[in-house]
Length: 216
Image (cartoon, rainbow, N blue to C red; front, side, top):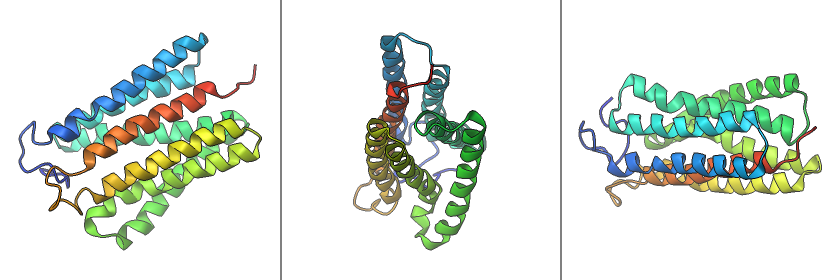
């Protein structure tokens, strides 16, 4: 798995991707900011607390993969991201749109399955260096879908926050997609931008959940 498809990595050395590795601090910083916001609000919110801890785990897993690209570190990188997407979408359906926990869980499962299906159909249509980004197209569509649904449900503030997060993710996905495409012009690549912007994205998503009104 040496190289792992990222422009910055030219060898199997631990620090062969210094920017890609160090930029994972953005996830840890996002988690710290979210925990601080939770404390200022002065109430327990275990779903968001769990998601915030997961953001920190995403940073650790991604750091491991970008320093030691192996099968197990790939799982440490990908699985927490998929888990966050699944759980956050379920929380969004419940907190922003008002679905019951059961319907929110079912909706999250359908959403994740749709993401995998979209990725399988989209990847063959993209240049080889951009196919890894196909798996995130469904997440981007899902964010704007949640934003529209929240507005339609009467929560314009949450809809606006999620829409802004969607715009950040669109830019982030652009950085990821162009990493290998612009490798000749930018030798150190652009994947570090994916990490920095995703740190911001995840904080914005956590903030939207923290600030949303809750029943009871």
